Length: 132
Image 1 (cartoon, one colour):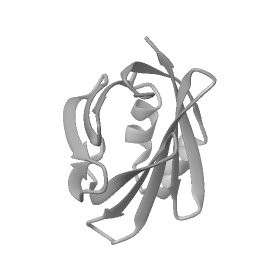
Image 2: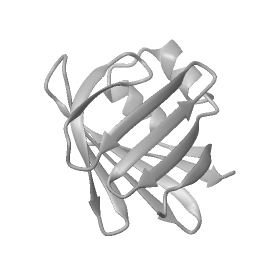
Image 3: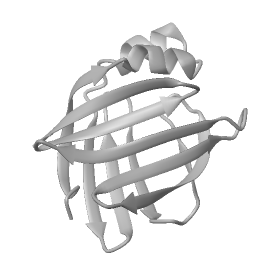
Image 4: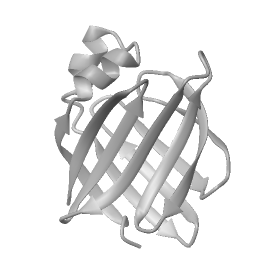
């Protein structure tokens, strides 16, 4: 279970541009860049329990690989989608409920760091987490 453990955000790549493309206002973008996000992941077979803790909220998420579920992003944007495991990479595909546009995301452990990559409307971003 490669992903199991607690991960704290260390750095971002192109995250502001990504959030701008997602139509997140400038104040929320500035706050999100310094949210001190910590993710605790517990995987048991194809079931995941994730706890997201940041300066702004704490949220528990439970999902099963391949099973559609609803999720609310930190800015309040509602999405629906699934996570799949491809090799050692967790791949998510989510559709926004407000405009039906697709957000894709991946999680992979690279060099001991959790790399979460995002793509929305052609804009890529990454958040890199260190294990606690």
